[in-house]
Length: 408
Image (cartoon, rainbow, N blue to C red; front, side):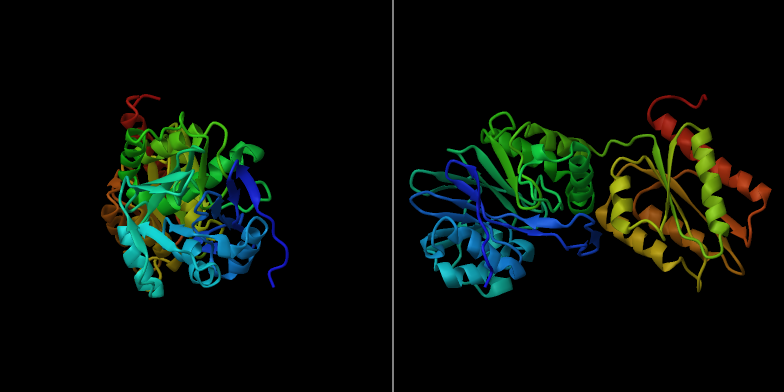
């Protein structure tokens, strides 16, 4: 038995019936230090409609919250905005209990639900299509590749609520349901982390979605709420999260430079610290991220507004350290644009790591400021000055990119 779980009323005839996952700390490689929520919404119309479900282990909690308002068998329609398992994992259980008249998804969502669950009778809705619920209506906007091919948003016109699924959300567990009840700094941090680790590769699509929604009259000014599938609901100043997305999608690069590295016996770390000093001497904001203390997803979050990425590793077995290979592979998949950078590292009898880092940075289209720096064993003062020079050169490139020239 699930025990007692109450729905939370968010509008006249709309209830939050989701689940909070306080213990989640990893979301396929993304460190969720603050847990997450799986938001589902119940719309009370002539056709009682459930917007999305929750992750499979929370199915009974979802059913209990629905039952605090109506009998689950009263649910007529289920809308699946996205087939990923954190939103559809409880779908089969809901169908089993509620026996809805219809399940709706985007055209690609129909295919995904069939492939995942063997569901053969899901009805496709058109992009821009409208579903009459009786007294209420939903309009659907496809958001392909934000972040799956099947993704879509649902707009409840009468309540002016946009059910945005994985857009405009964040991984954040809380007892508060609304963004205005939470620390603004935490909101921006977690929203940025979510964008950087989930949506960054699809940044070109974000302004198109915002424009598409506006064309349908769905603007921040017109909305009463944005109700995502992870994190809090936006009911005040809803344009805040939309403006954040527009800014992050533009990938405007600032004066921050990341020095991401790992070390075996401290030599590469000495080089990293010298590079950091050079960056600061050159007027850049240096952020050193030793990978023994920095998760890949936190590095990705810092990349969101960084102008430079300088990466260091000693050579191990003819290659980079596993932690460095991991973070570079992860960042390459996120496809950040418009960065400059470089490579460095110490070695004993072979120095392949620096060349391999440079190749990976080239694949990421990070512009190399100068050749990488290789130091055999422990860097002396001459080598450390070279590292400071690399930092200054990167800082100069960042100033140049911001149109500030090369002067001090």
